[in-house]
Image (cartoon, rainbow, N blue to C red; front, side):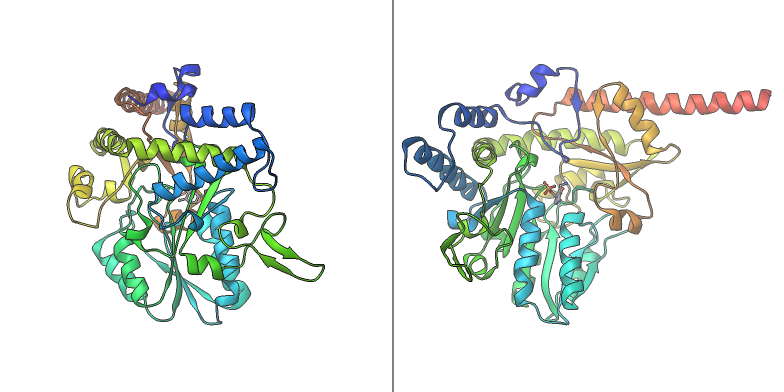
Length: 431
Ligand code: PMP
């Protein structure tokens, strides 16, 4: 139902695109909004008072309002635009530096993306802080026991908790609302990386009650190079901006400067106006369709995970592949009150007998795009004792035919690899 709203698939009807966790295709309304801006009011924003500049500024600020509405931010001032989740987390980590004291601990989850590890590593090294890791099971599940360990780790020595809402490598949904509730009681700052959540579920930052929430536009049908830093207003006020330059000031002398209030204080330099207008359109699309998106993706995810789960030649990681639960329990978990074993949007797995790249090469030949590798989560792969996984990820434009075609092609690929190995064995025996 959504596929025909994505012009990419009109141009590439044969492409089965199952790498949406890496980046999504762009929605028609996004392409249209960006095109309209370029064609009818291309001017920079916040700087001039002539008509098209005013029009551009209005589009830019309307986009901010739409994104604020999408995440239920109490005000648009709490939504700052930048180049993506990576920049958002770097901004938070660098901006918090003056507020940290030696000995503070930073808590992260074992499944974090490098973007939610490296900025904290640098902060820790600079200030003599330590990084503590919340482990998950060796199957990549977030179990009740992991949650209980995390609860214990959230103690008064911890200054910051940085974790994903949804893991890009495993698809696990983490119970961020419950976790933030405990963290706040201990005065711990919470930084939630919502990059893999934003296109697939309703995000309510006031309900989660986190201090910061970040995401990238290109994983939610908007252009690349635009992202969001949401924060509680008093924290954005206190946070030092990372990007210093034009427009983020109220007064500058040769020796000193006064910064604007948030969000403009975080938007130094000429902003990515097209990206922002695009993310505004994407936010509107998501708000108008989220119920249908959840229903559609839920059904696809069930087909995908069931198709994979029934094979005995692969090993699935993450909540969906949990060995001790039935796959349908995991999928329906979001409908029940349990906060464990929930997953979304992607399946991550390895083959018992074959190399990831060999299987991927056969899928690529059949126009199927999947991702193999460490998914920018190398520490997690080390913990799971694997080099990487094959990750199959869906979005609203994915269809049941895509999933069935993938499962059938995977089956053929694995059979042909088994047969070619058999032939090799036979000819070796014959020789
Ligand atoms: N966090 C997560 C969970 C991600 O999946 C990604 C992108 N793979 C990032 C952070 C970084 O996003 P970006 O590269 O768009 O800044």
